[in-house]
Image (cartoon, rainbow, N blue to C red; front, side, top):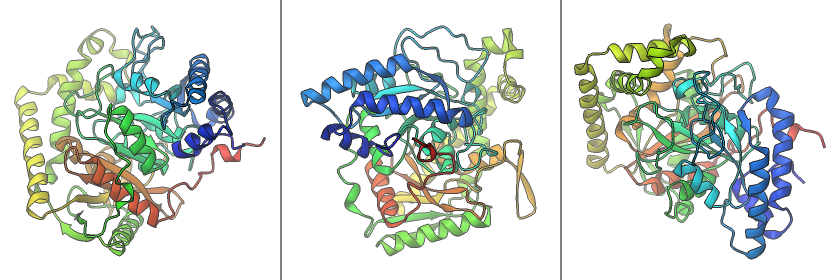
Length: 458
């Protein structure tokens, strides 16, 4: 028996066939976390008792023949999502260990679907960052898994769970998905409720899955969104689909290996019958100013009491972001909101006028940074790791569109690279269909990293 299930589909099949019980799978998963996660630190809390109770309930549902795709499947939940009886620490020493009184809707929906929540995954402090310490990347433990949902990305990549919830304010589902070589979906703004989730920026925050495959993201979204059939069209392919290939700022510059992998991915889509259309949207040049003009003040407003009473408990870099947001003139925040509307309207205009079904870009301009790395160099110009990662993902936080990251290759050091596909608001089905077509035509998905449950003996 494999130590854990590689995908939701595999887990559901084995559970329904009777070849494996949910209790056995939960025990194997908890054992794998115990044995492997000391190296990865992808989980900050393991709910052993809760997982075993949920697994027993799932076994009862399986025996009664009323199981869904996630019944008995082990999953992780980012440690900014409330779960009854467990603390929500948000990766910060400033948050108490006091258990929360109720589940966030997202966690409640997972429980109602019969999923077995193994524990809470590592978040960058206050969900405000791109590295998620102390979690590390399963492909190279001297490198970051991405943030702020890095624990979720690392846990899925290492095979500990086939799906984990992440949040995404400027890219924090897609960044760890790309850096850890898994699939991550930021749904349309508001599709998955963020009630009971510690906010960073309430007008930009999204909640969604990081998973082992596009299909697993679709199955997970059906539960997290409270309905919808997102798997029905996955095999529809991309023939005659018009794909806008984004170029220019903020998608350039990028590392040569990333550019090569992206261009090869576009050619793969062309070979599947899609029609790529080169596209440069000048308004997207203002992505970063707009993003941070909104995030700073909203985060500062959320954490104003913490910033005033216990600033020493906040990481200095994050404290600087919050302080700057608190001091930012209201006019700057309002200009950020105006810029967001300009960017949103520009994307929608181009998609409508050019009759585009989806947009494509590299998820990120570079692969995983080293743990201590502060900058990348593109064409002789230095750029901070944070700004480099956020500039290619944040356009779709500002526009609120669904955006998916799927693996599309590796750089010369063997580090994963991601392809980003974005679609019209509430048209997740088309985005997932394009991602599934690419995934089926390539062999990047499912390759195990050096730190993986398959390497555990016995």
